[in-house]
Length: 467
Image 1 (spheres, rainbow, N blue to C red):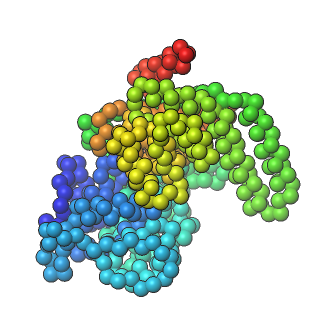
Image 2: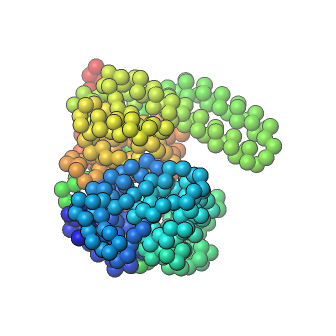
Image 3: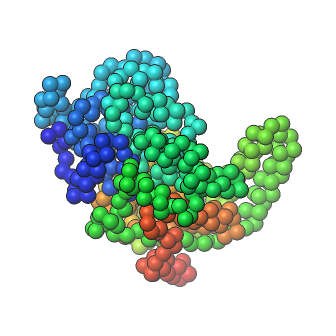
């Protein structure tokens, strides 16, 4: 009665799962399948589910507000539903401690949570929703500690975690998430590691290959519902990944590399602490990645221009702001829309709308700025000009295109600079992807794929060589 929307059949099954789990569950459907809508349907159906605290990444808070207003009717304390009313909502944007008034929904981002934990603990919260719950994959962070305390309050009856990619790098990251939603299900961390994991050479807990199936079985039996797009949306076409090695300017790259290593050696010699040494190493890696990005940039631009000639809408993801700027300048003839870290919400939304409405056929997005809370179904080509260390970041970026509303096969091209760090990153990504897929799904996508992609790539190559 309180829910305004109409659920698809698989979303009704999601609602049923949440009800049977008494609202203590991980909804791990692929991105784009409407986890927000299924959660709101659950809140509308479950008894005494309000007030609700939604914890989500900052960039998705506006979307949460929109969806609540769109799908939920107002319900008074005596249970009467107002057809044209909406629940009361507040979005908490300040870290300053201050008593909070009474609302139906409180929205807050993960970074502010520990600063407002005391205020939130006074609110008699009934339902806790953790969107993009992979933010809680490390049990040593302030945000994890704050959520753990809030989830343990007597008033909280329902705890729902949402993420299409709850595991980012290593399978053991599922333990902290499950320990918030269903404490004790996987034992304590030591017990979990002893049974399911081994330690790699860096001391990371990796789920033993032979135990991945049994871990997935425990998760699916007791806490997790996961559907892939291919399982539930027959009208949604496949996505095809293709790893393409492109040339890079080796002279420039080697020159930059020499500078980076000279600087690194100086910093390592002068470092007074282990932390300084580690920070200097991290800076060197980041500098090297940017140098790799610049070295292959002319070939990335060629690749993009040739796809644009086929009259298609294209999304290009990159990692560094400097590369974003260079791409934007070099592809100015296409009047590209841009998503980049630090944008105001209004500007960002205007850029998304321009692209989705067809006012421009090219969107250039920062990998971590453009991977959450946006819908880019107008495009069917996504090009990764640079790579991120985590396969889940790429998945999320791909799934900005590959979601409900997409009528075409999505082609994802990973452009790897020859003789650069890209080749190393790509190998790491493949290993991590395999472990994640084996726990989350029975099968795993292959990283590079199919005849269709080869045909399109051949078209692009023909155009490059026939100039």
